Image (cartoon, rainbow, N blue to C red; front, side):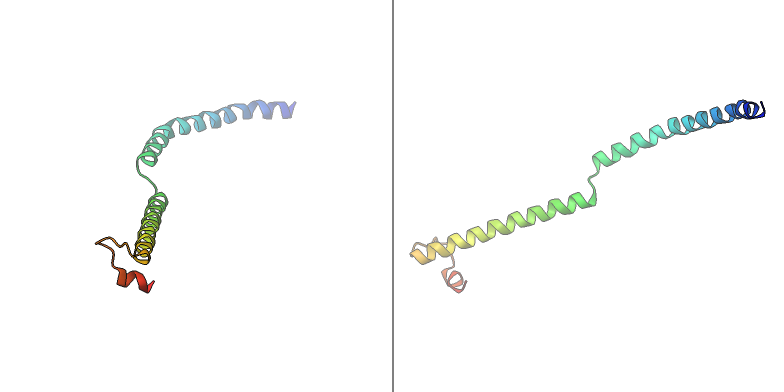
Length: 91
């Protein structure tokens, strides 16, 4: 009987915790929405760094391709006016 009384006495306290937790959760909704909005608009630093690195690698690949094409034209004796065959022969 005593255990039943303790359980019945504790029910309002447990319900209060649930209500308090729900109130905190409801109060935090605007914070979560605002945070999600900011995260969606502002890219993270890591993503920005990855993007810059990818662009730099792409530019390096293109530069290397142009150098190889210029060297090939110089070897064949058909250089373009913009080709510097003296530099191309050093590579």
